[in-house]
Image (cartoon, rainbow, N blue to C red; front, side):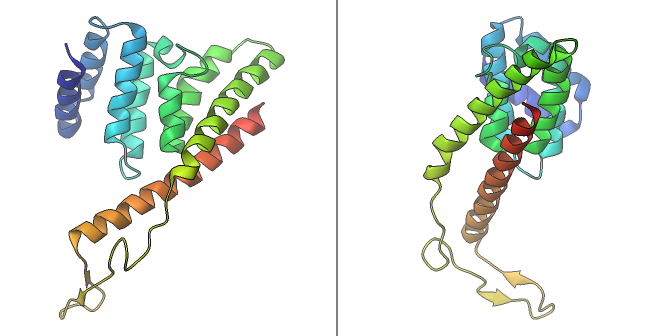
Length: 194
């Protein structure tokens, strides 16, 4: 099975609310690829589907991925694909899922120094990713990158008309803003844990 086929099947199940189908396809896919490729491809799926609006649902899918094979969240530590996804998206929902479903069970019973070292390595990866992405954000200026409201509804003055392209640009800015804030919060939490 190719990852594109997996992505289509996962989308079909997601759109129908078929959790059992999602689990079946996640498990089945792991019969065709290595653990590393499964981790990478499933992280890519969540990455492509993630928006702040769907954060809770994508965290649910991440939980199903980790439950299907906890090693998918631990492979290539600390540069694990699912963890990199968490930081790149700056998603606290994904982060909390990753910590609760993968890291805490893995560290259970380990001594305090080992736990601290583990979180420190995750912290270093998170700060390095943040440092790499942060300078790539560019300003978005009204009038240059997008226009504002061009009309107001006559029936309801609280309803504004805006070009779809301008709305999409503003929505993208909001997603990037949420990513920046999320990364800040993830880094702070990891710093507190080490």
